[in-house]
Image 1 (cartoon, rainbow, N blue to C red):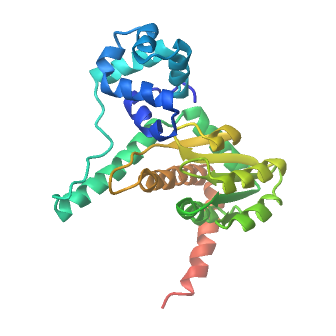
Image 2 (cartoon, rainbow, N blue to C red):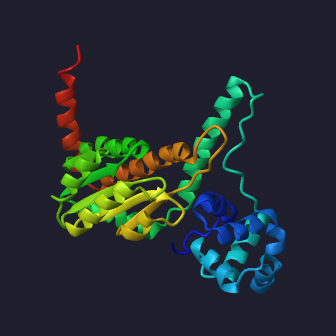
Image 3 (cartoon, rainbow, N blue to C red):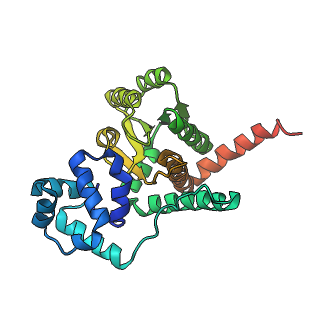
Length: 285
């Protein structure tokens, strides 16, 4: 990741916590517990306190998207001066039905807000450019991410561009083998480590297609292998996995891409929508 958006240091750490190595989690937990101490400590002091190498701390900062320890400290200091509201409130057994509803809604709002905040302009524009030039759009996802893939097709079919979505691995592999350099393929996975989807990605790349990933903020095999990646961010609670919260952020990213496409291809989109409305109207009484 670049440093165009390096705010939300503490949230970035929480978001990627499950994907960290044992030593990286040691550093992450230390920063989360003593953020004020970090901004007054050198990289050597932190490494000595945790009994790890300076290089380990440096690599951890790079993993978060910073050039190094000093850049991470500056961003963290700014965050402590202007604290960011936590992404969710814990749901308690004593909460009323309406309190639980309010917390779920707020968690979704925060997931969308944080996902918007971490988007990089150049990266988003690059994805949009690929979509605008695509002969066909293909969406792949398994399990819960398959729902997002189907929604991608449901949105972009309104643009008049041929769109396809597959949630079965065999069909995904068959479809990916038929792609070419004029096609753009989306790979949607919250963890970014689904083996079946990564296999489909390999086939799509061999076919010459442009590959786009939508995944969680943490580095993953998917984010490293696609041509360009868009990120979501969310947190897990006792009663709700982070994947559930991230899905609404994934849907919002696709929605933002669809609306941008529609604005730039207004005449084409309007013609496609008109044809669809005429076809669907036959089903109405």
